[in-house]
Image (cartoon, rainbow, N blue to C red; front, side):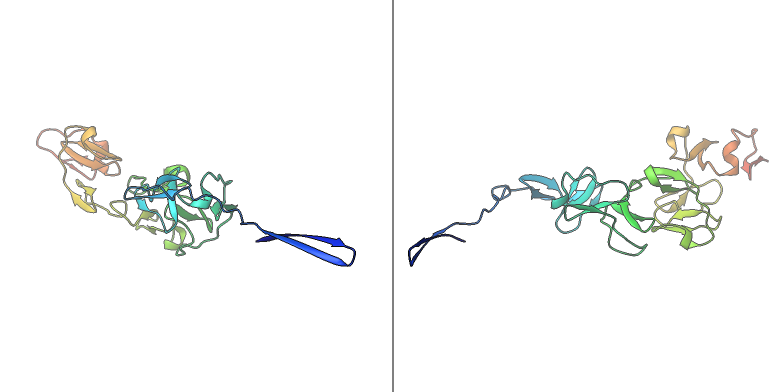
Length: 224
């Protein structure tokens, strides 16, 4: 870029120009070498995976959320997400890709996914602030992405054991129904209890039966 000064002397016009280079911000990452799984942003190495998920191109993990480098340090009000350094409402649908890996589509707008990694008891699903709730439904349309309307008229997760109904006397592990022995409730998973040496779902009718007389077993909540 040239910066010129013009002087007028009588009928003679003199012009003097000086070349001025534009200001270029320093590259803070020029001398930074980050280990695998990290990328340099503003001179520091940040993870490119967040809460077990791989962030998108040009994104890094900050405060458990995948964000663009331009959004580092930006805090947005409820109902808005940061894009290119600016907070705005990001519209989405159940099947859209507008939301980042650590976001979910809530009320047609991208929001921070508090439920990512949450494990809810069978028959419940995770909602805002990672609360496990029983949500009534009459079809899949009433449930959120990653859920379906279960046979009992409640939204259930389509991942893992949340969508699996196991026979009485068994519990779900890695999508499979198993008869698991136990010595106490601590040996069982969330939403389960130990009864007669076996883990039972808390919804199992026999979960409320502490023990049966010798020679009897619990069936449908009754010893016999």
